Image (cartoon, rainbow, N blue to C red; front, side, top):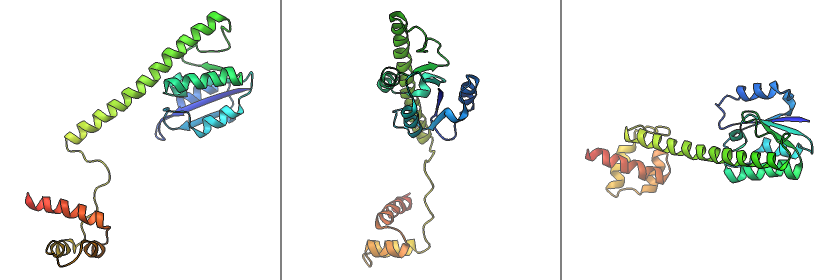
Length: 200
């Protein structure tokens, strides 16, 4: 039986290229399993379901090794489970050397093991690079004054009056927060910002 596995990192990424490649190999749509999440580990619902269905002699197509995962050790481990423990074959479409149907002799196994290790390393390294580029991008945006997250809700009309009463000790912070319709922690946070703004 032929199966295909697809992974995209987020819901807005397009999987069409991978689907087309798997269909081109004759994999039925009902045998294509797809996860839309990170490749940092193999805790993915559709992958787990697929691994549970595979039997000795089945063939699993994957478009590229980084679609299988981006964790060096876990890619190696899953490859061993699928090929050695389950007895299925794997074919990585963009790397013909990673086709366990070929070269089952010692030299063929040796070569595919080396290629798998190199590509697994590259996949994890790329994941690290992506995370570093994201962090650098966020830091640069923050330095330019870009604000992340939703904007704070406007202050209620009675905030200034209640803030003054609270500052003058006429009411407690809890009472002021309640009258403003916000939690005490939010009231204190907004009061701190309000105070700083007044000093500018």
